[in-house]
Length: 173
Image: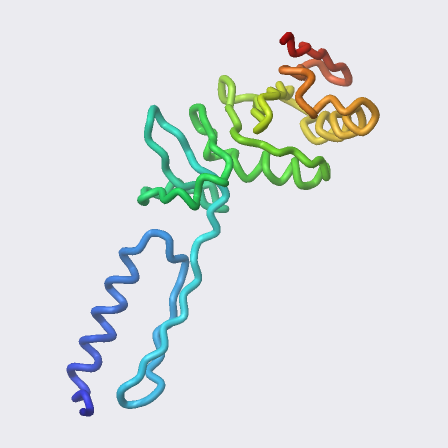
């Protein structure tokens, strides 16, 4: 059966209104391809991490926006951001890590006093970054790790807060 025109436009309107309310959709295009067929093209937001506030998790998109949405287990591979305004700087620290070309198996990022980061790795290692020269510091960490394998988990803390220096806290079994 062919839908009458008015009904068809109402359906498009209804679909459009439903999609506008979905906070994970960046943009969408609805096209009427024939009398009884429509095509919907969606672009989802790029989710870069989870924001943890107390025991609640929220999504962080590539523009550092916080999105309230049901968190499913398949999202827990994303890094967790903790600390006031950590979401506003999430893409900055992630892009610095990418630019430094260091391979960090990170679990979470803590934004300390809204000025510097601590990175917790999945193997229990904690990296304390300085407030400034983060890229240089990450490159130094990569260099030290390639020489001494310090990210393997023999050290529980790598303190890089003083420019050009590093302090290692050994793991005591």
